[in-house]
Image (tube, helix red, strand yellow):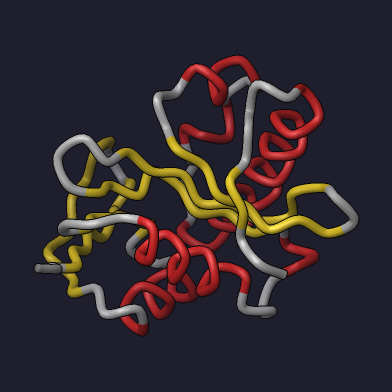
Length: 148
């Protein structure tokens, strides 16, 4: 399953991305023991974000995606895999493809107790840069990948 660009102006794609995000963020929320703001986003709010999107599809429907900005370096905003598709390498494939399509340093963050995501980023060469608490009780691990 090769990552490909996603067009969220397409209603079916946007709805599928939203659904995958909600399912993935519920799992992360349980892992880190805290509510995640993205669990409360609507399809319209997701579409309105100034992000670039890559996804993996099964039977034409997105089952995993990565979204980022690249205005001043690359910042991965979100990486989500539908729980039914966990442990199949989709997250790694998406990060690898994103790195192949972009230039410059890359930053990303995830719940500090989200061990699967932390392992994925560290295996991809990211180094942990710290831990922040954007809202009381929510610890977020930050990572950077220095390139060129």
